[in-house]
Structure formats: structure tokens, C-alpha cells
Image (cartoon, rainbow, N blue to C red; front, side, top):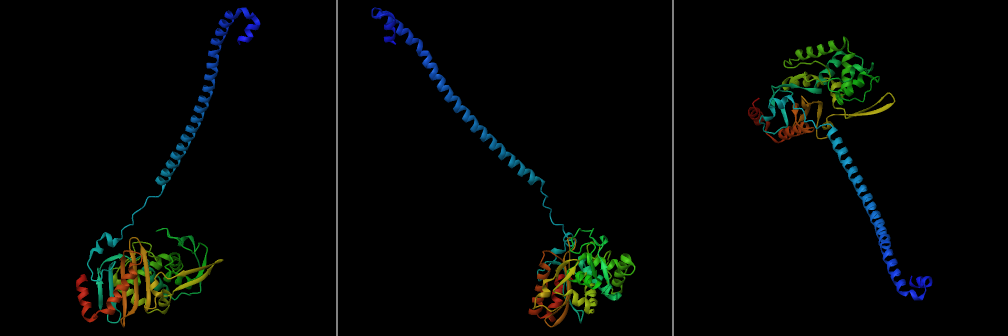
Length: 359
């Protein structure tokens, strides 16, 4: 800068030149500072912008997380609430609190010698309770005694659909089966539509059939038994253990009922489908059991139910278990009774156990 000014003003004007150089330098300082500040400002603004972008991204991520959490909570709140199991009539009546020597899970139990009618074991045996699909044993008995043709084809209709409990069935509306096939499914697999179709197509229709079921109960001396429909889905179908012993004893006299109730499984073609049905009582497949006739049942009001005719410890017995708590507990109760009979002097214990349970 000084050399440039000497060229303009000459060497003699050195003082003046120095003074002008000083003023020019002072004038340029703010410009340099301003330029530096501007550069720093740009860097700062860029940093702030980046920080703002990162912060915005974090906010978006957090917002998304909140949205996911809120969505999950909303879904959780819209899920069907867990509904406690409906208590059975026996539970509501306090029957499970009754003492019994074998600690059975069934609130009602009765074991009778089929030949002598001797009561070997009993628990709340006079109680009258819903019997669920044990009903189908009477349905099968009435059909058998009517001597209807077993090869007659019957069509499943909308009338056979369960409107009582909304239970499912693999027998679609429009399916055609013989009466014999429907009997097999009703008694072995407890098929509700099969049982309903059997009653619906009997002479006189449903009303006449149910009346026949109740008439047969009266004839057999089943004084505490009433039927309102043929499947057992209604809790208004009720009976007592003693009444059911009478039903099993008579039903056991029919070879068809013995065969169908103890059948292990059954495969049949329905429409264009091959369907496999199995017995609802796994004990029929157990080689250690000799079962002549059986039927299971379940609705929430009745609990798990089971009736059987079986040979145990050299005696033909009829066993009744009603309102059992637990899916397999009725079978467990049958095992407990059998073990007791096989390991106990029954001539002494029969009356003793009967007295302990209060008859």
C-alpha cells in the first residue's frame, strides 16, 4: 500500500503517505472483521440448521414411537375381555364342598353293581342337575326302539343348527347322511346336528319325539328326569345319578347302542369331503378297560359328565359322574374308582364309603 502511494504522491510526501496508509488500514479493519464475522455466522447458521434438523428428526422418531405405543394401547383396549368360566349348577349349589373318601373331582358320583343293584360308592347321588349330552343316550334309545330304517337318507337343514349355545359342527347344512351314520356320530362323537336331525325326522317331528323321550323316562322310573330337546345343549335337560343308572342299564341291552357308543372312530364321506370322527371318551381305546357302553357330556351349566357300563374287578358296574371340574377329571374319577375297587375289600367298604358320603 505504501509503495503504491509513493508512486502517486512522490517520495517527498512520505509523512503524508504514512498518514494516508494508516487511515486506509483502519478503514479496512472493520471490513475484514465483518467478513470474518460473516464467515463465522454462516458456519453458526449451518450448525444451527443441522442441529435443528437432527432435533426435528428426533421429534419425529419420538412422535412415531408415541403413535406406536398409543396404537398398541388402543389395540389392547379393544381386545375381547377375559371372561371367567361360568359356574356350573353344582358349583353354585356348593356340591363340590361335600367330602368323599376318594377326593373325586365330580360333585356327583354313583357306582352300582349292575347285577345286584348294590351301591358301592356314592356322593351327592340324589342331586338333580343338567346332564348335557348324556341326553343323547335317551335320544339313541328312542330311535332304536322305534325300529326306523337305518339306511334312510336324512338331510341336515338350518333347523339343526345350534341356536342355544352356538356350537360348531362339521356337518354342513345340506349334507346328506343315513340315519345309521347320524346315530353313530351322535352317540360316539356327541354330534349335536346329528342328534337334532334324528329327532326332527322321527315320526311326529320334534315335539312328538321329545314327548316320547319323557314318556320313556317315566316308564323306566326316572322320576327326577326331564327332557326339553334331544341334544343336551339346554340346561333344562336334567336328571339324577340314580335315574341315569336306570337309563344306562336299559341302553346296555341294545347291541347297536353298545357298539356305537364304544366305537373308537368313524370315517365317512360327506359331500366331497372325507371326515374323521373320534370317540369323546379316550378310555374306550385303553386296553386296560372293559367298557360295554358309555356317553360323555358337557355344557358349562352341567360341568363334565360321564356314564359307563364297565367290568371292574370281576363285577359288571354302572358308573355315573356328574359336574366334574376339569376337562379330563371325569376320566380321572373313573380311574380312581376302579383303583379303589381293585384294591379294596368291597364287601366291607361299600357300606362304609356310602355312609361317609351321606348317600
